[in-house]
Image 1 (tube, helix red, strand yellow):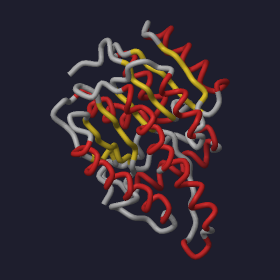
Image 2 (cartoon, one colour):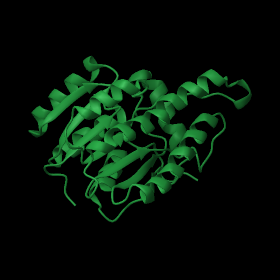
Image 3 (cartoon, helix red, strand yellow):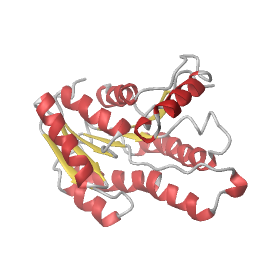
Image 4 (tube, helix red, strand yellow):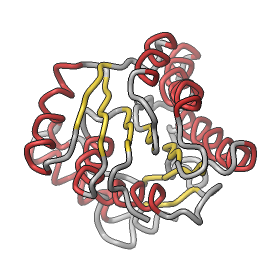
Length: 240
């Protein structure tokens, strides 16, 4: 139950949960490969984490909607012990106003992106000891209006986890399901951010939104705990 000496590949590591997870597993002794759409975004994060932790860090530019690029990147890493797929997007609208193109694009990133990364990584994974952690979200089993696309994708991810944990065993397959997580402060004014935290906090038993580091901690647990598979781990502040 230790990440020392393991190789962890993380998609969507240019910010938010993926970046927090990259720093955490590096601190726990892993070699970490950070990927994101833009090399210019992910490079300084890899360099900072290496300086902070002394861990071996690498980066790759990766658009998870590009199947050939996914195959190339996964094949460039060597043996992969753990894969964490955080690359995502967002589409929020009432169902009656939600166009098919927007839903398809969201699936292209969050569903097909995770599918592509897992398929491409499998030939290189340490099947006896390794793990895959997909990313779902609370909006499947704990729905909010306007989040149909999230509910549909997250439901597909959680169903896949149960199936793949059996089919790909002994490789462990799990998912983490974040609740409202405070990862977009840089896109808000201070007043907007304070209002967001107050509104979300008023709906959760813990009284605040989550932090990316808290979801990263859950993802690291799923990597390290060798008796956990086929599980979706809620990290949602008690969302009901």
